[in-house]
Length: 201
Image: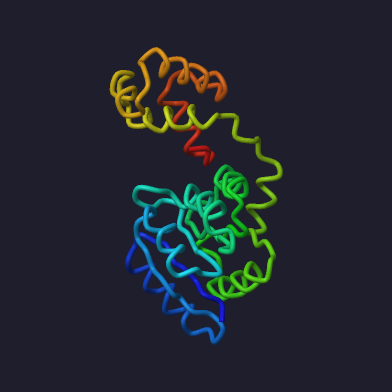
């Protein structure tokens, strides 16, 4: 029996996935969480074989949780299941040592098979997205540049961003300047939009 942890913040989607997976004789959903901060503590408690993680979760993203699971629960393999068919997200998922990346509009029959393949030691990636990722530029932004740019995405002032990320205003300006240069955009808002569109944030 393959034991599964399911992390999805939309209750209807989470429930539907749990029911569908429960129909498979060799799959068992042993835990469901809606908050990304609950993923690692739950995995430590129930020791799943595979964690299915959405990317956009409250408090801790699925990508961050994948990295934490690799460090703290290395026996748990990770499959990202998301609506975002973005090459930047796929690159970040692979860097976080996820073993799978599937898009939610793919046929549901493929999910159970993907779980089995990942549990057996394989890697499963949406084929069209994998091809696009090979041609896409790598994320040029550092972790700090991503953090500052994400905080700037809503049009916040330098002072507001500095307070949110616990840096001085001059340091925030430097990170934003570097991010704008790397993205080839004209200002922090354009840089944030481009970075988000490419899955870099």
